[in-house]
Length: 363
Ligand SMILES: C[S@@+](CC[C@H](N)C(=O)[O-])C[C@H]1O[C@@H](n2cnc3c(N)ncnc32)[C@H](O)[C@@H]1O
Image 1 (tube, rainbow, N blue to C red):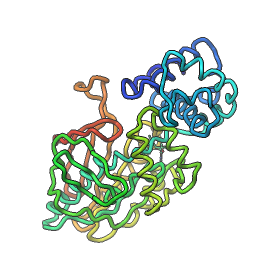
Image 2: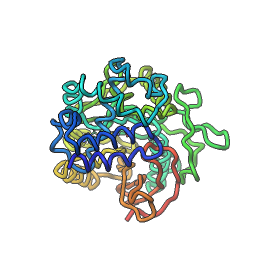
Image 3: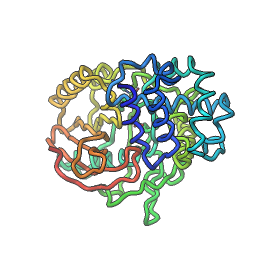
Image 4: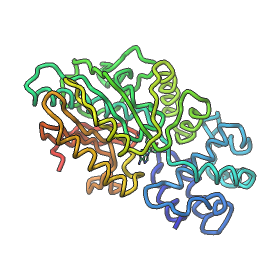
């Protein structure tokens, strides 16, 4: 079962990270043979589809490399200046896996995939612009609402400052904050259906996670870095800049399961502020019980939303799609209450860029 999950997980990096793909494929083979990976994954027998044990394995191995504990393997890792040789990767990985099997098992069984990807701030930024303006229109206002952002599954909270990031578009325009330490190309096709000359005003931010990462510590920064595929140097650079930005604008991520936390946050609303519940690449990890409870909490808050205290749900999550090669794709969905509006705003890479703005009704 685990070997099959690993084989499926190897599809996530595909051609975007040949190093990660090959490591997970070789590990799947090793699991079938009952090799050292079986011992390493012994704490993860209850894994199911969506919990990505292969990516947790790759992340834990990457962390050993980043910590300097795997000198024989480091030569394959561009994150520490190496160059992958896929033919010799597994043979160089084996001594490291044998030496650190207990530590790897402990780390892998104690964590979920913690890819806190700052590029997801780009669809979030565009989605917030649309939400603030559509909610205002529905309430008969000319000025977009200020936003209170509530993020479930925020990990290290790197997407809790979308207004402090710069988004450099292909025509040279920079949306958001052009002076930010984090400026990147969101690789947009099309544009959000909103007046982008308005400023996004974020007046409140909060986040929770089952296992929050404290990015003010070296341990937290290493943890997030380990989940970036080691041959994706652009993403590593973007993460470094996002961590620098977080250091100048800290936001604490509360340690809590989503539904309980959300219920507390939504118990109060602020007049003339749009409350936005946001989550990205979290839903697949949430248990069926938590999903049901999360839906109920949101439905309760939606029923109480008013034109002066509106509520939005904005999510960037994977959904089944006949159009996508892999059978699913990551879509940006928006619901607004009490306006009763629902949009599918577009779709993109799971890491947030590239992204195509393409508005259709959200069924
Ligand atoms: C792949 S990460 C995505 C992090 C972040 N949302 C992003 O887009 O960069 C998934 C996160 O969801 C969190 N998570 C999973 N189930 C959760 C739950 N029931 N309540 C809160 N957080 C949860 C995990 O701990 C992990 O940090």
